[in-house]
Amino acid sequence: MTAPQPKPWISAISAYSPGKSKLAGDRVPVKLSSNENPLGASAAAIASLASDAEAKTARYPDPDCIALRAALSELHDLPMDQIVCGTGSDELLNLAAQGYAGPGDAIIHVRYGFSVYDIATRRIGAEPVIAPDTDYGSDVDAIIACITDKTRVIFLANPNNPTGTLLPDSEIERLHAALPANVLLVLDQAYEEYLDPLPGRDPFALAREYDNVLITRTFSKIYGLAAQRIGWAFGAPELIDTINRIRAPFNVTSSGQAAAMAALEDQRFVARSRAHNAEWRQWLADEIATLGNHGLHAIPSHANFLLVRFDGTLTAEAAYNGLAAAGYITRWLPGQGLANCLRISIGTEAEMRGLIQALRALLESGVHS
Picture 1: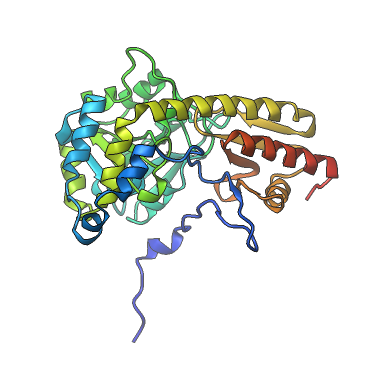
Picture 2: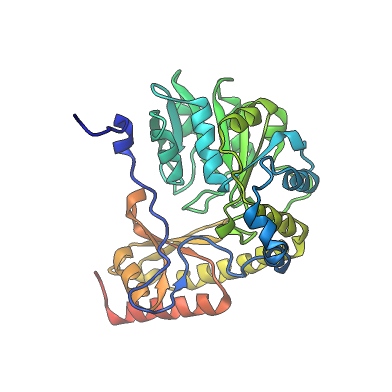
């Protein structure tokens, strides 16, 4: 008798590889590998985690996240019944693929896209179709050229991860206009809150108007609640109904729901986090620019990280290892076709200054590989 065999397409999945968080020995690293908020979380959110801890531990959470959805509805002026919450936005991305595609179908994502898109596609037996990027940015014409009668879902992050590039709203609207009505456009807005709010701009506009657009967001980035695993999505009632039918029950913990609601109320913390990120992202980009004669180049970013290309004698792999030896964990991305790049999360002032000091020391030491 043979052992249980997984579906044949499962073996094609490359398991998700998160940013490292530990160094050899007992050293406490400076972690700049997972795009977390260097300011932590709102004090109100942290306080909520300690409140009524016994009930939050022993009792099942609200399965429908009613209070959290109401808070999201009020903040963003969205119909509450068109919001669903999940275990991070990762769960919702997977459910979007599961609900609308399967074996024989195709799902499109860009070449330098979030690796979860490929996993979400392959786990249901669908075919991943990779649209080439242009200058590390998503190319709408390339995505449109990939659409066939097999296409069922398109994943698109904006701002993009891991490159930090941004498509203007007009380009996303142009992409949507080219889609067949039966193709679901999933807009991953995990880094949307790092954009400066513009008067009159509505990041939810397409999903308000069309029934084939789903927008996902997360509390893991600017809200600083990565450990709580909370995401949410907005879309047409039919899309939300589909996700609710297949999501796990009690998928968001009580403590997570409470922390998310407290975080939403503290928009001053969000604004402070956005300002800190903008200041030190620009500072880091400027410092990298001074190293251009060593072959280092930063891709302009609209998120909370910089993608830095290493075109000189110091390779990205050597820089990754050298920075780790100095106590700084960054993200080397050979598995995503970016073997000559490091993605560096924006940290505190001290972390950014220390990182650049360590990088300059590497360059001065003549380490090449």
